[in-house]
Image (cartoon, rainbow, N blue to C red; front, side, top):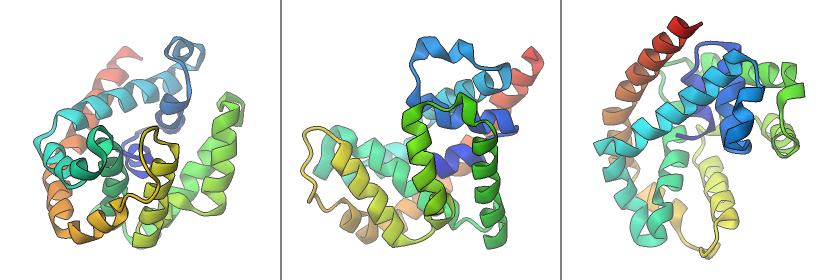
Length: 197
């Protein structure tokens, strides 16, 4: 899952911070954060493990695998944020806008815990309102180009966004089959984390 999905699959402000930090910190540094942020890191990892093993995600990867091979999962993650952002059963459009603004507020409130590389990204994320704007196809294209630019061994002109557009109905079905399951899984992990507190 990508930024929007991870931010949605949280239950406290601290978990929001931890969900974002997971991709930006070394494993040994996770215990230097407050417990609530550590819970977000744990939740992020549990979500990723569940996602990687879900049959619908395996099917979705087949859209991108012929183009990018082992990087297919990264492009599925980006694609899923498009469907999350457009899922009006989870939030109304105003609800998604409010969610996005709340995430930026929480991250800025916890600025002291953010590593420098994430602070730079947060500024761009907030300025472009990435979380809310994942609902637009062109923004998903921009995110996919970013993945291509950062990936080793991939050419930047691989038509992954075209594959997304061509297979959008199929990917929507994969999302529909997957997201209710990951939501329930996240709730279960959160319940276990709360028992530890």
